[in-house]
Length: 86
Image (cartoon, rainbow, N blue to C red; front, side, top):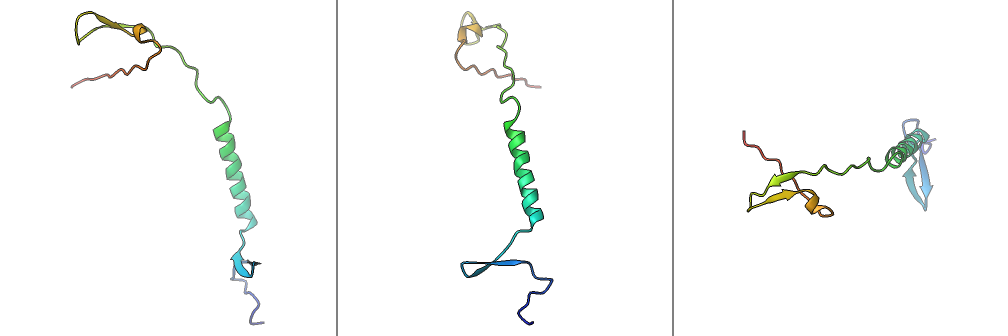
């Protein structure tokens, strides 16, 4: 009985002549639960929140005479940089 596995050894399987460790069923169940949870959380529900257009506004042009309106840039990307020095 020297070659018999003791109760301290983890279960092993033979695959192509090599010994490999088997995962316990509890680990497989927890992994499957986690995978299903991630699929449900990241694929369910609305993919994008409801989008509203920005209200139009007019500002003085600091680069020259005239005014700048948001509606003049409709259809183009606009970056609004709020700067404050305290």
